[in-house]
Image (tube, rainbow, N blue to C red; front, side, top):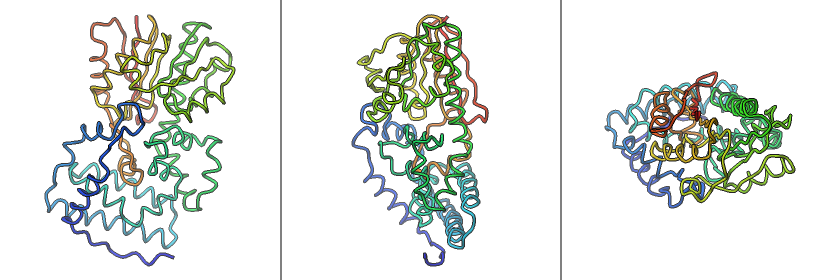
Amino acid sequence: MRPAATRHTIDPEALFRAYEIANEMTKPHFEFDGHSLITPASIAEVLKGHIATPGKAALAAATTRLSDLLDSAQKRFETGDAPRSIIHDITLALHEIRSTEEPPVWRRLVLQTQTHPVAAYFLQDPLTKWSWDKPRGYSGDAHLLDLIYRHPDTAHQVEAATKIGRELFEYTSTAPSSIANCDRRDILARFVDEAAARHGPATEVLSVAAGHLREAEYSQALRNKALKRWAALDQDPISIAKIAKSYGGSIVESVNGSVRDILTAKANPGTFDHVYISGLYDYLTDKVAIKLTRRALEFVKPGGTFLFANYSYPILVDGYLETFMNWVLLLRSEEDLKRIIEASTQGMDVDTEVFFGFNRNIAYGVIRKR
């Protein structure tokens, strides 16, 4: 049994020093996925204005407020309150704090949250723990998506969790952002099917950073053998192996390649009627996102389409993601996507569109070559 919850008095100066030490110790010395340009350094470059030193008074008030919140959550766990109720309340509270505090203060509050004893409870959730541990080097990997999808491949992991962990998982796997991921999977499959309907049985499709290509399980065109080729490009050997095992002997072709390979023209998978990138833009600076979009359009045949996705404002789980899951996303608005599209298609004869998934957590950009 844990001892009864006690109030944690926070010294803002001590917290600041701890933050600076932790920041120094965790400075990236490598790209977290090994080959691409998605790195902690690139994200830090975008967020560099968010890590200025906050005022002492603002930090003191915020740390006290957060301490009360986290202590209360810990006490609720210890007294047997429903885990789903606790995580719901903490998620809403962290979202509200993240929305109202200045970014420099919020970055300090992230560390305070992560080092509080209540984190041990939330890390019993398989989804939260996988994101925190980052076994493949970054949070939003293919296995994490499988957890969100409740794919059979992850059933054993959920079953092995504690009772608290399983109850927390019922919340995290059905949170709005998770539902948006499932919706994204369905949208990806729908665009493939629509491409097949337009271009006929000779349709060729490319997925960049394909992960486990779970959307293929939802594609009627693949099921009805209405495609000529579906290339799934990824740099992760585990993902490549899973795709090969799941779709060996079919028109699905696994291709070993990274974002860096694409940007430097080392990867040239050919041309396609439909190309899509669903999980990268959340980590890319505008400069890299524009460059990647331009490069991806080189793979699109005349009359073909390119689709990309990006988490958008606001998502209610943003505070929980950045604290207990240690998962930072670069959220983009509809206007942000339009700006990337405009910069990527200058001088091109294209039709463009930006739309949202059903709960508006994810925005999609579409470019159609005329």
